[in-house]
Image (cartoon, rainbow, N blue to C red; front, top):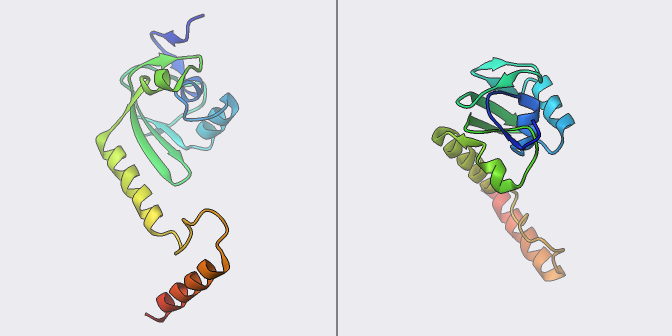
Length: 135
């Protein structure tokens, strides 16, 4: 199969790489072997073939995504092409966005400053943190 998009079936490790869930084929294989990818709720091996319509559960770090395969590809293409290979379920998208919001709110005070704070900014941060600890 010389073209990027294929019909029929495709190895799950190749598909994960082509759909940009992993940066390399090796990383995609490791993701499957570690049990972070399930097809239809079952743990699979990297050589497992998937078809359009299959439901995948992919866990990367603390993020869990449930996607439905809408297209197959054995070669990695652009991000636009990769986005057409799957569709994330609405429940998964909402849970992922809620998790991102919780992470953002749980950051320590002053973590969003970016550059090194000036002496005055540092004193204000210390005063804020001390005031926060008393409550």
